[in-house]
Image 1: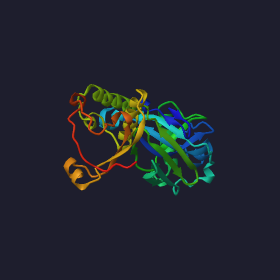
Image 2: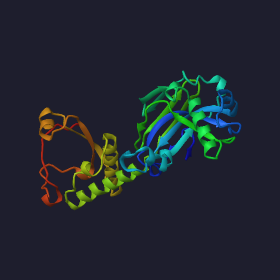
Image 3: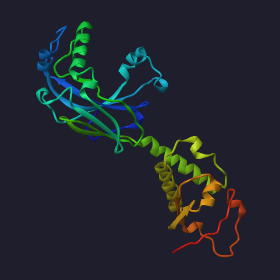
Image 4: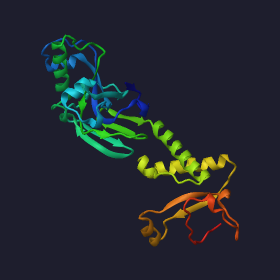
Length: 287
């Protein structure tokens, strides 16, 4: 479950992942009191670090009740620990502030007092609970004390940055291997459609794609042509006129690549059987 700071959490290992930021504690002594005081808790904790927890539910759609998540190991999946080990006397457990960014955008904020008033209260509850269950907390145990703010959904390729004042900053990358395979499969599907002049079902109904995903597929599609000996000769733009946008129901310009295999000579006859519902439009080309 442990992923190094700055490391990558493979997408294939995750299920409906969500990220949250919290303080993790590492015990320097056993905690076997049935009702530990603040002094006993502080004495038992060796240090604290900033942590990212990746929660994941094996229950479809996160449609869970408390018994579902308990049975599912508290929806545990993976976690990242900071390397700056901060003694408790240097941590403002209630006043520290938290910020989590996803791909550079702030998606969660919070503070230490959002965790039961103090993360130390969460450790106390856990210590008491584990004593009552016959498995007291032991020296060396890592304790993820609970989120300091809302969770955020995670997707392939996401970059997570977590900061807690006084404890530092850590990062996590979410693997994109599933989407990379999907990109290649879509590119091969489109290339096969072009080579066989057979229309393919609408891609966006088969796979949710961002604009970046779509351009990644385009790059792989053109690579198929390059591997067959074609050479990139230029670029084309699309939807540059209001009339064309209205006709196609879009609101953004796009671009694509040109190869020498796409060029036709003036007056050259077209083999209609090589095309899929073709359309023609006049425009100005620049070289």
